[in-house]
Image (tube, rainbow, N blue to C red; front, side, top):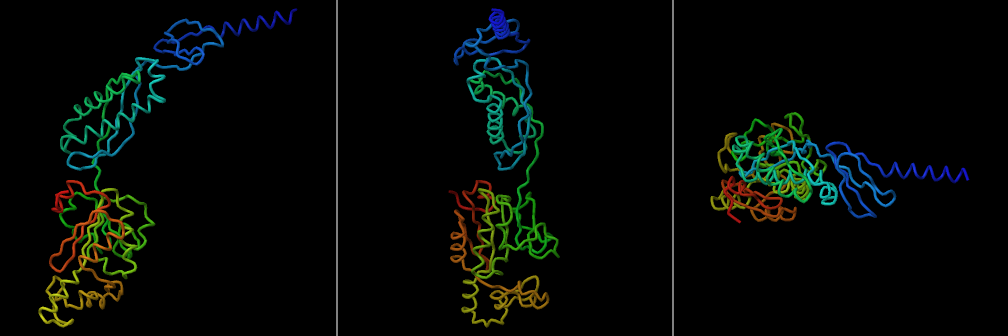
Length: 360
């Protein structure tokens, strides 16, 4: 008999403990009855029906600061900015906060990032630094409308850091960073790749092994009179490496001797291979120099790499780029050069304008 009384007493104590819930100030607890939403407990003393009802969610109603991770945003004039911020929000509807999303904190964080990208995408670079308050207000407005179904009120958003992200161009085989790049690369971070460490390149690597580098690093690859120094069977390895290190939307800017034009001039003028084709800053250039590499440079350096091992016409360069996987290719010929701008994806308006490319 005493055992039964003790058991009943223990059950009664458990029943009472499970029945009584004290909710702290500025908190809201969501109660489910048999798995279904029943009510929200307010601060103070509350009672539950044990085993049938349970507290499913607990929410803090105080203002909560939330760090928004940094991300890269692109302005209207196609400049990259690295932006992070802090969002202040408050749970206003415990029921919606519980059932409106699997994780309302993640949801509003992603909403904040998406809204920020949208707002900055409508502004030019100089305006983004001048109009921080306007950007903050527009982000709050955009998030607050979407957050209503999450039971959350967005109070304010503040940009913490706004940093200009320079585009990066990989100069393949450019020999020296002292040699200026074309004006299209003003504002780009210039990184030199070369197989020879004597020129202090940023990256020491054979261009045939670009696939060993991390992919998607660069907005542009610049390759001026280097591709012809590889055997024909290696050209695809080099071009595929360009594609590998480029970001989506990035481009390869390639210049090679125009063998078709060299042959035409040689025949039209009755030149021999040892005759001077044109005068350059380093002296007279023979037909032989264009076809097989600058003889004086090869002799003085003792480096066979300076010899030309293949050649290109505008047609053969286009075919090589297409085979490598470039999707949008623009070819021009001028001054005994074939000039190609080949894209990994679709070119943007700014790049089209820089290179005077035709509209889509």
